Image (cartoon, rainbow, N blue to C red; front, side, top):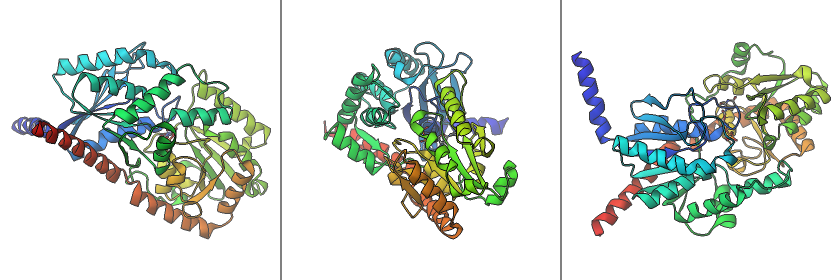
Length: 438
Ligand code: UDP
């Protein structure tokens, strides 16, 4: 009993010393099922922040919109990290393009929670443009430091979607989104970009004003690490003799899954009947990802790959390293990716990556060194790239070693979160300096 009381004292003492931070991730709940509907990189990223920031002395509260009646309102995932699900609009899934109207309610719920708990957050880190709007309003209400990460940029997303015809017209919300994305760049205390490419896009397409700091996303290299291919295949019940091409992500037309299917259908390995396409992604039959899955299944049938394609469904992070490790190559054929966590997860597991030559993928994947970069939707060049890697084991091994080295050096989660930690501390020090000089 004494021990328990001492432990409690210790926890509350160290809590006292922890600096509070609020992370706002309006639509992306860190504890939802990843790989289904719209849940992907942002959910993973904010969950990782909540896991790691406490190691640097932060007490983290993540705020997200409650999108399921059955979900608990608060998840205490560790002594210094909570996820708080605020009621803002109906407690059900709402596509992100339709959430904006509920954001004033989100702010009221945030303020009510904060006052009820008697908490002041000196620093708020917002993610995605909807949260940016919330952050800007909160900055006007209280004296906070605002840090923002875009994770997706409207102007690039809309241009790409119109170019590749995944959109025929802009959604109604487009104008508001573009305006908020400019405001947050100009008014936040710092915008964190995840790649050089993102910085260029912001400066060229959004605004010359505002502070930008480059801190890439990272991955947990203790979890995503090289595993013997044979061991992974035995664990997953996959044949040792096949050439495995892997896709990991969501079913979304913008992810370009069709390109891999068509490229696999004409690859050399397919001709020798030695190829297996493994698709890791979840879907709900009555939702947009369910519709895309059906379309992809149809293409798989059309090109005669049904027997050679494995639709695995969604897979949790603790199993995912086995899928990366079992593959000879991981293909990311997206029309656009602001960053693309899958690329660094695959490389961390020592799997060569073939990715579209776009956005953050140009930052993470080094052409001919950790994999190959190919123009999006170019089936011929994707086929050629798949054949090059599957056809040269020695070179593939070198790509694999280079890839995991690169992730360890530049995209190790512990290091990238430490960079964020330094940024937050720097911003808070500026505040102290300002108060002292006033
Ligand atoms: N993911 C997962 N299980 C799945 C499919 C995907 O955990 O079945 C994860 C994947 O590991 C990655 C994230 O979803 O961490 C996808 O992030 P990425 O940045 O590549 O794409 P986004 O979803 O943001 O478009």
